[in-house]
Amino acid sequence: MMNTVATENEKLIELREASVGRLLWRYSLPAVVGMLVMSLYNIIDRIFIGQWVGPEAIAGLAITFPVMNLSAALGVLIGAGGSARISILLGAKDHAGAQNVLGNALVLLSIIICCYLSAFAIFIDDILIAFGASEVTLPYARDFMLYILPGMFMTNFAFTFNNFMRASGYPVRAMVTMFIGAGMNVILAPIFIYYFELGIKGAAIATDISMMVSAFFVLSHFFYKKSTLRFMRDREMYRLRLRVFLPILSIGAAPSVVNAAACFINVIINKTLYAHGGDTAVAAAGIFTTYTSLMTMVVVGICQGMQPIIGYNYGAGLIHRLRRTYWLAVIVSTGIVTFGQIIGLTMPEYIGRAFTTDPGLISETSRCLHISLLAFTVVGFQIVSTTLFQSIGKASASIFLSLTRQVLFLIPLLLLLPPTYGLDGVWAAFPTSDLIATVVTVIMVSIQLSRFNKACRPMAVSQ
Image 1 (cartoon, rainbow, N blue to C red):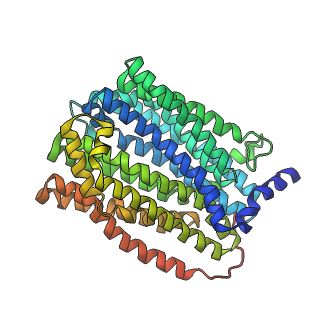
Image 2 (spheres, rainbow, N blue to C red):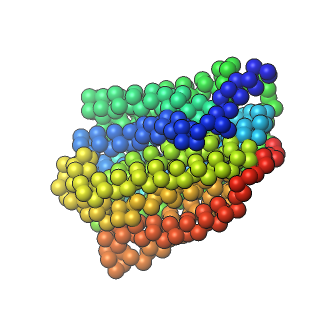
């Protein structure tokens, strides 16, 4: 036990004492690289599918986005909630409590994955049709989903425990484990899609193999004796207890709701797009989502690096360090999404051509990017602010803030604008929602920051 505590102190003491700027760089860079690596899974698949299979396949793949978002939502419920809880407990020097979170998270995640994969396997056609699949796109969507299901199992384990690895003081190792899977996917995707002529099924198989290898390396970390947190033979840490897993679920609910909301928003978007622009509009939205996810994933990576710093210092009562970390993350994230916005607005046709050679799809993608990215510069601030509330355990505020942009404002706009402005109304709903949500975000963050005292005694964290 003494060795474990000593190792823990060596890994975590910098969260309390090191420069905030250096900490954010050290924790965020591996996380950003990891998130970019995760984006490569989707981008590589979509580029190969678009260039070698066709625009109908891209549209079919876009139909699967809601299903994938729902899977991610269930995984994030445990991954984000557990990692935030681990950071707070380690900040309060409650190592035993952090161990219990690790064990309960493993059991909870296993139960959730088995339940949702069984439902997907049984009702896959009904789910895809409900999510907007047409007669043309359903075969592509079905082929991809049936083959990707085993990989979804591995994906949830890989990304959930990758977050735990980072939260417990191993940001570089977390990055390396994601590199392993992405590197394999880059190699395997063209082989299965093109060489074996498996098309969209080949993309799914390549992802399955890559994620299985990545999950193996991530989970093996928690068997090392020198790891801050590890799987042990103590059965008590795996016994589900309300006081252990309820905080995990409450904190993880916010990012989980975001992903779940994205699932149902995608359903509404796909149906609205199909009604006003057919499969071409659905495919254009798929390219738009893929491009913007590249920037938002970088911001999410910054937030993942920010989360253990804020969580630990909040638990330790060092609010001045929390403030500096938050504002630094806001500045960097805003710069990143603004850069992505400029590229998307000035070179939309080049982005479209990266995914397809179809002139109609390239034209519609260009139109989509010109309108949808008009207010993209505020998205970084929104994501970082949501993570702030999540990191300090303010679940209800984080959930509400998550819902403003994707549900409370976007859904009404999707219902109001298209009847008057047609397809352009769908594209215009995105920047309009972003601007309104930003106003709400500014108000909530201002209230929360005003409540912090510069000098705060360490908090008592129960477990």
